[in-house]
Length: 633
Image (cartoon, rainbow, N blue to C red):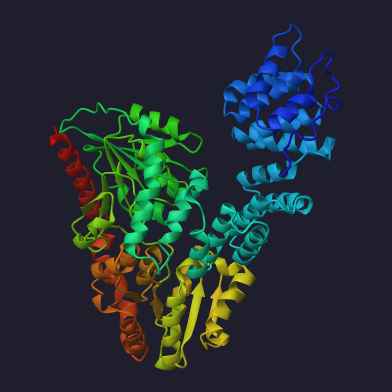
């Protein structure tokens, strides 16, 4: 890739009236001689009439050294002195992008493009800005324009694939990543993007082949959590292998933040009110937001002072409900990890709870630096975080049986019954009796495509073969993309399932999603990556969920719910038993009709919907952790 300084010349900067040589500085920077270039710039900047070109280069060098605060005044001198110079406008835009002012960066990039068509990588850079601003359409258009003139930019192709993944255009994403690998088969970014796209498509075997080609040390900190997240969907990995990956990668994070860990001075008094902080990027209409909102309003504020640290930019009615249930609410989306770490320490948080794990918008770096004396992970993830500085993982015996405790760097803290609390949707329609006979049985799954690996499809195909007149309804957002939908149908055809027996539907309104349950008789839970919210929604809508007994957190999620609802007969002991149960209930329309009527009442009387009771048990767990901490000398 060309260096962005290669087209800078002394002719470009004809403003200078002394012996400053832009070409020489540009060459030095291009060849990595930053300190020599900086020294020359400083010599010119010490003169009475500060050379704006020297100021520009000096500010740029400081940026490359990561000293953006020091760079800003020099770049300001340059842009104020030469406001119409496209190179300086471009440099200023790069500074704004790197410091998070994406709106300002966009404005200046567009101004630079308008004044010059020969600025290296400018379309690539403005593409990044569009992406950060949520304008995926222009982000892709700009990046494609860049790739048209720089088709050998492997990272550019990988970045395009990342954008296509964000739009659930998984087939396009695999194509873009493969374009990069044609240029460099060992490119880490391209292998990472292709691996993620394939796993998200359900092709876990091929996806893992590309992920494991990545050199972990070459992935950015923002890529390490997605790497770990995707491992949970891989049936070919043992649970111990997945745990080891989490511990190895998280160790790197802890080493990077070891110097930030403070000596906590929180007063160790057992009976005082404790300060609890919740960190999440999903405190809104999202499964995490729904589960938290269901019980948090019942927390006894005489015992617990709640602070919510919202790591998000979007807020809605669910956000407001959660906010009203906390004594303190802070939007932390614009705080750096260091700033957030300092804020939490200043807030004197006693127990800090992670609600994200290795999912999007997590702040695990703050936990790595031990921002609070007691740290807990809960709800948002389905494996160990791998962080030794997180003390506990809040769970129950169904989610983490005692014989699986060795899979966690955290100590499991078991709640007495359910580990979650469900809040029924006010707009949920009543369950409708659907099936009249065994000839029109409809199976369903409303989980994401990442969960539909080849083993799952093999089992489902067997069920469809054994129930000749049955149908399968699959609803997930990935089906909005015609290519992804066609690819999934091809996978069923390869298993001798006629496409007429499969209905694929994409995103829909929440009301329509709930109503769609009245078109399904039996929900088929994927494995090893189960559903949780989808399982609860199905049961509330009167649809039983068939699951496979698992051997790790993500494979226990549905069975944990079914045990609380006393639906033990819907937990298969192995894949053959899974097929047997599905086929057996397909011939029992009356039993399914009875369940559809009874399930909602059964859930209502279970611990799953006892919000006040769950809040007491949740609070008791936190107070128990605090008392144990106070007892330590």
